[in-house]
Image 1 (cartoon, protein in one colour):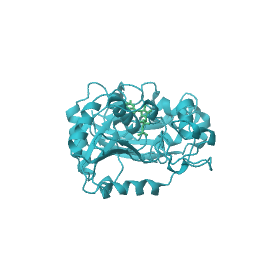
Image 2 (cartoon, rainbow, N blue to C red):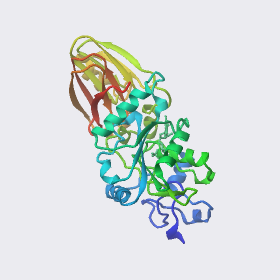
Image 3 (cartoon, rainbow, N blue to C red):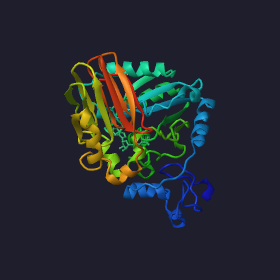
Image 4 (tube, rainbow, N blue to C red):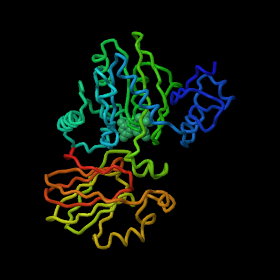
Length: 368
Ligand code: GDP
């Protein structure tokens, strides 16, 4: 019956009553062999997104089930938005279960990245965040890098237990699971919807494993700090790197500024001449100017030369707020959640970052 149906794209319970709610499907579409909801249908065929309301409590309730069951928990994070995709307090949900940490989208980092160093960095970060991990793997679900290694690691660690794949929206959970299904049997029609937009995976999907256990795709947690919430689909594509990031190096004197298109701005307020290495989508404009001219330039050019965002998006985008840092150590990354980061190479710099209110801005030891 209809009550038992779940969408093959996002896992939401199928319903035909309310177009504004998750799982809505026109009655005519129920005849199909594989039912997907209207939202997933549109995403898949037209790359259109319909907003459906989702309560945070639904997510946390689902996550709390993790700790009650005996299972292997696979947590996926996005290397491009590590902080934004982390899920604070995750250990609470996991209980005594083992955690395997998969760091996805590794294809976006320059080839020169030292993977062992990066793994050590991730381990330290996990420890600092109070998460005990059995292992860390650097993967690219999209490029199918280390997916097989992940599968064998999952199999070795799960010891016959069920597996939960967890992570924030947009970290590549669906892509990863689809690759697993493709490589280890499964049905083309079951492919889970992937999209640029946060909030695609709505509910638990279970995929049978050969020994009768199950692989669960848990709902993605929407991270409100992601810049993605402020821009439209086209702009999100412009600011999301699609391939290996080419670092762009700027030698700056104090009192100079960098605009990251019209989405953020970094002021080097005080310090000896310094190198700033920018890691953003390759086509995203980075514009250098004098600090004293930066306000006027933004007022005149935001939405024009300094785009994205477009003028239209700008009307809805939260206004810039300032985040100031004194950089004491060498090689510190200044991270703008979901947009990218800038490595400040030498110690002893005062900087101020402007980003839309609500976007996460933080510093960390450089990952590269
Ligand atoms: P989910 O919300 O966690 O299920 O994430 P999706 O699987 O829908 O992926 C979100 C976005 O990230 C999509 O645009 C994917 O194409 C992209 N993506 C997923 N895996 C990778 C990867 O390994 N590398 C890169 N560069 N992009 C990825």
